Length: 191
Image 1 (cartoon, rainbow, N blue to C red):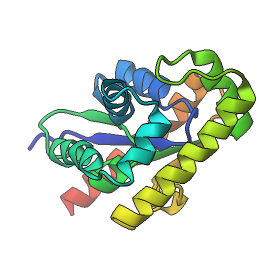
Image 2 (tube, helix red, strand yellow):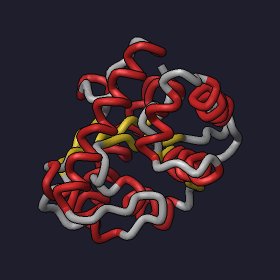
Image 3 (cartoon, rainbow, N blue to C red):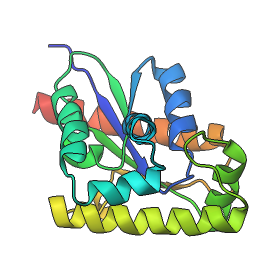
């Protein structure tokens, strides 16, 4: 029976999840499902920043539920996928779970210079403050709604610090760990 492995890519804001998702997709031929992109679309639709949408979602869980339901359904899809999502590791528990870390100063620099349309900051300090506020909002909301902590590294198969690493090197580390995970999965399925 053909299997369709999934990769859950979670991490700190500004850790390079989107870029690494693209590198992994190019290498593996997997399709990307980005909840960050979905969230930014929703924020734009409501005329909010992503931080404002996070705060709004604290009292409107239907937005998270809509995103989470998509991931849950896609876990069984007959295609290999990369989930670029804070909670995919939770909603797609059969996936290979990756967490990317980054120093908050480096994250603020990356996001400030990235020029995301829904995240415009006057300076790096403002970007850093918004990153920290958004992370706090997400951690509290996910703990309250799902009783999970996405920043707990024990939830993941591999954790990689991207602060000073080249994206290609991070991709190689993830691919090596993914290959070992797939081999283990296949061995366990044969037993």
